[in-house]
Amino acid sequence: MISSWTRLGESGTKDTVADTATLALHVLTNAAFGAAYPFSEGVRKVSPGHEMTYRDSLGLCLSNIITFAILPKKYLSFSFMPRKLQRLGQASREFQQYMDEMLTSERGSTKYENTNLMSALVRASDEDAESKASGQDSSKLGLTDDEIFGNIFAYNLAGHETTANTVAFALCLLAAYPEYQDWVREEILQVQKDYPPPTNEEQSYEHTFPRLQRSLSVMYETLRLYGSVVFIPRAASSSPQTISVDSEKGTRDVVIPASTAVNINTQALHTDPKLWGPDALEWRPKRWLSQQGNGTESFISTAPGQFIPWADGPRVCPGQKFAQVEFVRVMFTLLAEHRVVPVPRAADGQNEERAREEVREMVDDSGIQAITLQMREPERVRLRWETL
Image (cartoon, rainbow, N blue to C red; front, side, top):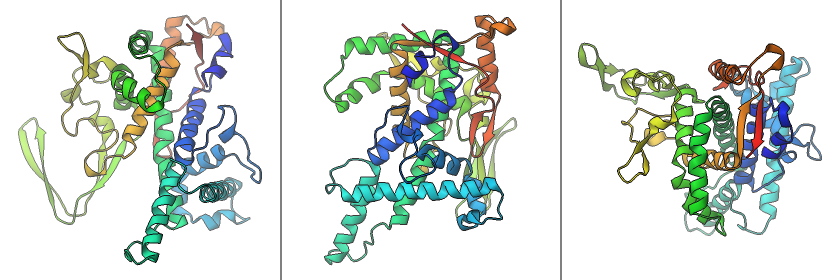
């Protein structure tokens, strides 16, 4: 990805959001299926026997998830349906075909030789089936193929747009605030100096991830203001729930009736001046780190329920750590030897400061599309990547 961006030279790229979506999908396909592709190919390339790419079929399914919840998939194939809905039906069939092929390939490989999500699901299903067949445990039914596909789709739904959007927002904000780029790069270069590249990936994670706190603070601050999930749906249990609410008149108890649906407004929670201070609406990654007496930095601890981009409690997102590691690794790779700057529009007489302002305006002009928060006009500003 960075090679394709630097090759564009002075003109820069207007495809930051599209490219980070491709990157996130490549990470997912590698973790889920063990499939690694060059950035310019793979999920962007139509595979033999298909009419759509893996990326396009999954992207259409994800961005129209509400339509799938309303209309049964079989109706989308009818010839009298609008062309847009017919294409949605095609995307659903194409994605299902890709899943079938990947599952067949996994089952055809040497037993349990792979270490990815698909192999883990297949292994768990086969072991349960073998346990039942041998009479060891008749209660174990194993996973059906449809259940495996359902888990894979949920994995893609939860981990694709959310992480891709966060990376895109962060890169745009770093371009708008160059002082934070320098701040993050300073830590990256220090980690590279103190911990030269090890011989295996596990050591790399152990040595670098815990020390890249500035990169992680950029992620946290981006999620605080521009989190992909704006509302978290919850419901009270089968009995009434009593909660304490602080108000100007003091604390009062509020009773939520049994089985009541509740939407948690994370956007309001994450920008409440009472919790985050008078600069709650400012993007300031340094708020997440405190300076220690020995000169080191450590992450601050927020109050329970104060910061919940991955939800909270027993239903917290299981992909939280995966997303954190992915984001930090992207920052580590991109910013160690490169700088991102907005490209001023010469025709409009823009200077660098006005170009940075426009990036901030583009980021603030965001809204919910399908189910996640996204920039409305992500191609409005070009970003140039310079090699240092």
